[in-house]
Length: 229
Length: 229
DNA sequence: TCAAAAGTGTTAACCATACACCCATGC
DNA sequence: GCATGGGTGTATGGTTAACACTTTTGA
Image 1: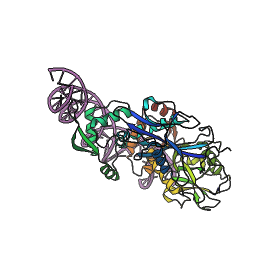
Image 2 (image 1 turned 135 degrees about the vertical axis):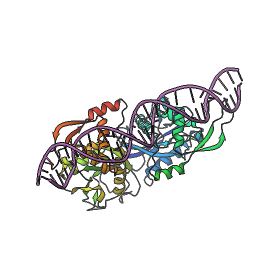
Image 3 (image 1 turned 60 degrees about the horizontal axis):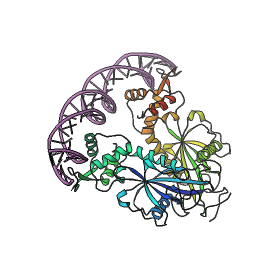
Image 4 (image 1 turned 120 degrees about the vertical axis):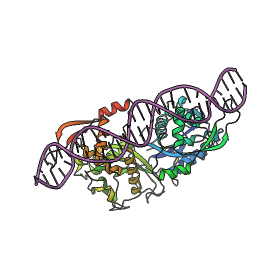
């Protein structure tokens, strides 16, 4: 590598706040640190950006390596660069948040042998570095964004009931929603496709399944449509 | 500097997209490059992050050094990290956008002797590096954000007329607004304080001046109020 | 037959939009 | 006195919010 700039360079990492949803709780994916500093503590999955890869590629690579997750909704969140955030040297972290369909990853493969686990967001362990601050920022972003972009579907299985969706919104918005108004509003967007499938073996009337029509959303968005719950 | 991590480090810069507004146009502050690469071309003000300063401190320092600007609304925008965005070595740029009261900086002091100038956003020169992409991202952010946060006031003088404000919104939203509805809506927020001051020497009825009540905004926001134009 | 969640419409209050004329001032 | 932009109110249609009962199913 040729160094043409005269300034010392900080280290740069990418870290990911990975959210999942399991019918009741918003969950967060954490890995246990194998090395100092903060050895043994839980932290966000992530690592150093390599010189040949973009930031996005870096997060995806780290997530695949550390957690086995490879299909997800990913968006850059914020870059954290306080001089003392890593005790060893100057480390700037480009943080991302991701939304995954939790049911697709019930078993997390920890290919490099470190522990990986899902935690309820409401009950997180103490985190390494300034990762608590990063998680807070991500939570704020997701809670705001779910109001005006249909990103909630990234957290649900392909097929879901309207009650599943409502529970998700109620959890993220932290407020109860009226069932009739919620259904009216969400169906009026024309973004949900009712399927000819119903719940099985439930001790009450079986709910119909729906799927999110992404193509339709892209189409409507080009015509100036704005999703809003 | 002790390097405890085993990976090569990219260079990290901070760059700022500085917007101003001058009664008719949204303007952008650019500096002319003194060195290769892109010598002589216009570029965003910015530079290398120093090891002891935070990213925010870095942008503020660079802006003060290159343009003399020291009071501004500043927010982190996005981090650009494509491997080939700088022809010399790997450079990751943490971009910020800033809003300034243009009237306060009619004369830009270029303390380190490079050229500094305001350009209408609608008529920008060719920019160095991937700075055009950064500007686009900033424009999208500002145009979206002005709808749901009272950031427009950062671009106006302390005292402004309702017509000034309306012109600003019309420019940024790229659509004409109804005068009566605009006034009703903006006054209803209770965020503007009418002053006992009127325009002087205008060839028509003198408009009243207003100022933005920031304290009131903070107060209302804590009670769950959301600004929306 | 009971418990549990699914599904379904109407009304009233509120909010957003459309729209046109008189006023004050300097030239 | 004319050109210029400042300032003001109302009516209508559309949108949102509040609200309760019947249906289906398994245990």
